[in-house]
Amino acid sequence: MGNLLRKAAALWRRLSPVSYAYPAQDIATGPCRLHLVGSIHMGTQNMTPLPVALQKKLSQADALIVEADITSGVSPFSESEFCLPLAERLSADEHNQLGRLCQEVGIDREMLDNLPAWQIALMLQAQQAQRLGLRAEHGIDFQLLKAAKAQRKKIIELEGPQTQLALLKALPENGLSLLQDTLKHWHTNARLLQTMIGWWLEKPPVNSQLALPATFNSALNDVLMLQRNQRWYHELTALPPGDYVVAVGALHLYGEGNLPDLLKK
Image 1 (tube, one colour):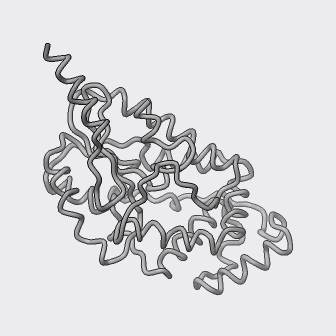
Image 2 (cartoon, rainbow, N blue to C red):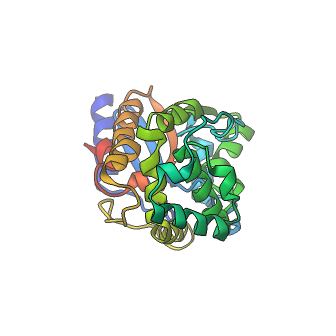
């Protein structure tokens, strides 16, 4: 009888979802109750403190689940492979575009010349976010991690910094396509960042199948989004019974192959 009641309660929660003023969904996977939050890794000052509803969810949770504990101090830039000069890796147009963007965000282009392409892409994206007023200490997952540690909550990593670094290092040609897409979709990425900020400060989208502008080519999208969603799905459905707050990048909650739809199936 107890098992039947739990199943009925889970079905009721699924058919009558609670809406939040930030991108989040409540999803039951068997004996687990997940508060799935669409995090932004860098945020604006008015994104602090966390919404009261999210603080309450965290205080009631058995653990906080994140992609990686970004408060651990592990940096993806601590070790860099020496690569060919950028002029030999990029087309003339791409090389010129890189020079313009480095000047725009205040990066010394010569300092980048022999770095892996994935590292250059991340550095450019981080500088772009800072130019838009975003800071790591105002990021949602950073705030959740600090709060969870203050409450001595258990923290579970879906990947961890070393796994994420290995994923980047495994990209073909040291992540050249990630750098090329960063250059190609520079302005689109800026607009997407501003859109996601709006999800937290104004109103999140209702439709999980929301079509978002592409900032990755299909091969990168498969590696960085779809395959990771599949891995996280298997990890989240294998959790022991309990209540969890799960913070993953907001883009993982929307579009084709999104994480909430996988969990609901």
